[in-house]
Image (tube, rainbow, N blue to C red; front, side):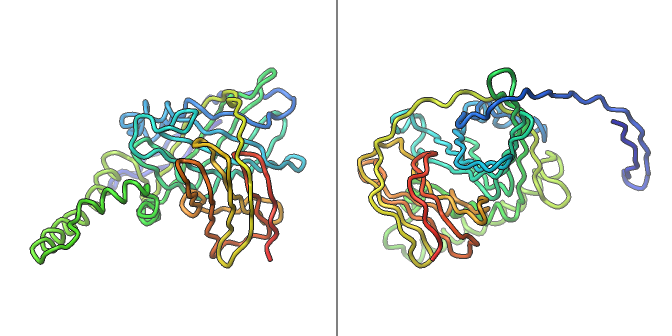
Length: 322
């Protein structure tokens, strides 16, 4: 590929004319696996990202299952369990969490392209809101192998989303920092802390934007990376759907007889394609003794015509929009 153009530094204009050699990946033909695990995640650019969290990212995984296929078009559902073992018990973190990805994709000539709209991307410290996550994998021989990753975010939108993305347990601990019956003096202290915190946020963003190269001129993040593919671990869920219904502004599913590792989901579709919706923020699962008993998806403002109720990656109910 030959690339040529100009760029400006200060008042000086510079020209470039370069030939770039690109690696070419040949994909083999064959069937698409119905389920796989995205693992060994890495974000190589911007270059500051590996300095902060490459070991943490590499420890994460996303289980992806194909929910629906129509020729070359693919609908897939991703489930990311963080901070828990195979039984759903907390490991290494005080607040384990489950994140969801609604992937709209294609499978053609041995290449799988999956793209999710608004979602939360785990970085081990907290989930980061993304406007787009794209994964591209390839078939080699008799299996699927990893490829490229693209993650995009708008810094302004991310700050608004992160308030609602704070885990429930962490919110409870933050509330515990405040006195039950604050005195006037306490309110003054809290006001000073709040004012300093609010002043710190834009300063932090300015510091990340220019010297670190984390954001572009439009305050947007463009992360480029890679991942590998592994087989999904075999898992038999005993979770049983008791009832699923559409209520004003929400979809509700009732469950029983599962375990702590179960991740029930609700996927919105429009004309057979996934609706871009912040599922990890709008989908709440109530648990009793760690076991899911009720899932509730806030659909206010969503444009959908049917919903799939999922047990992990298996569709157990279809609900048309009334």
